[in-house]
Length: 46
Image (cartoon, rainbow, N blue to C red; front, side):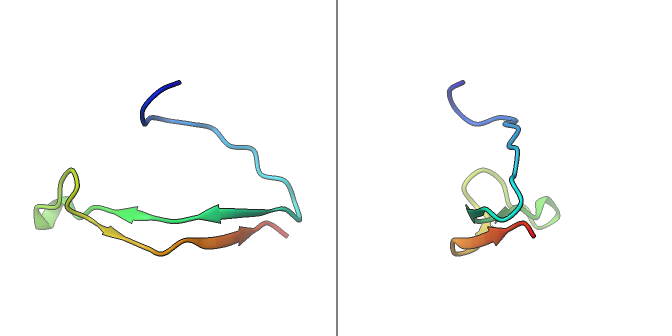
C-alpha cells in the first residue's frame, strides 16, 4: 500500500509503540497541512 489511508494495526499486550497525533479543526478552517501536532510519545498496552 502506498500513500496514506486506513491501515489496521494489531497491538500486543506489554509491547511499546511510538505514537503521535495530528488534529484538524475544520470548524476553524484547518485543512491539509494546517493542523496541530503532538510530539512523539510511547504507547504501552497493559
